[in-house]
Image (cartoon, rainbow, N blue to C red; front, side, top):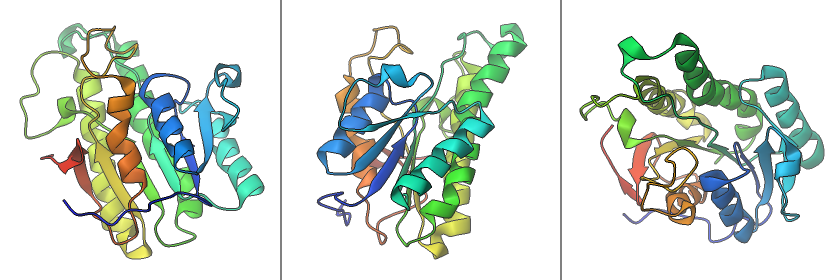
Amino acid sequence: MDVPLYDSLDGQVALVTGATRGIGKAIADGLVDLGATVYAGARDTDDIEATDRHAVELDVTDDEGMVAAVDRIEREQGHLDVLVNNAGVMDSRDPLDEMPTDIIDHTLDTNLRGAVLMTKYALPLLLAEEGGRVVTMSSGLGAITESQSGGTPAYRISKTGVNGLTKYLDGEYAADGLVANSVCPGYVQTDMTEGSAPRTPEKGAETPVWLARFRPDAPSGRFWRDKAEIEW
C-alpha cells in the first residue's frame, strides 16, 4: 500500500508507554532514529538508560501519573504529535472459568483501561494541530473475526477492546485531523512470550514505527500487521 509518510520526525514529539524493554524500547529507539523527541514511559525511570530520550515516570494504571506525564510534555515541549499505547501484560493463560479475578482485573486495567485513559489525557495535545497520531498495540489474538479459543481470555478481550478504541477514535476525531490505528506486532521475543517467539523486538517494532510516520492524509481506523491491513 502506498501510504503518505513523514521521512523524518524532526521537530515532532512522541510518547511511548511501557518503553523500558522489548517492543516498547525498540519503538522508542526507532522514533529517536527518525529524529523525534521521545518521552519513554516507565514505572521506574531508572530503567531508561539511554540518554537520547526523556525518561518519564508513567504507570498506565495510575491516573494521576498519566496526567502528570502529559502535563510535563506540554510544559516542556508545548505539543505532542504521537502517542504509542504499548504498555501491556499477559494474563495467566487459563480459560475464563479458571482464571483468578485479580488476574482479569489487572490485565484489563493495564491493557484496555490504561490505553483508553492514556489516550483521553493526551487528546487535547494530539488534537491541537492536524495530524496527531495514536498507535495502539493490539494482537491477532484479539481479532473478532478469528477463533477466540485457546485460553488467555482477559488478554484477548483487552486487545479486542483496544481495536474498538481505535475505531472510536477514528469515528469521533478523524474530522479533527487525528490518525488512529491498531497494530499486531506478531509473535515477538519478550518477557510476555517467555522467549518462545521467533520475532525480535526490532521486527515487532517496525510497523508501529511506520504507523507513527503517517501523514494527516494517511489511512486511519485500521488494523495492521507487517505494514499491511488485516481484518478486525
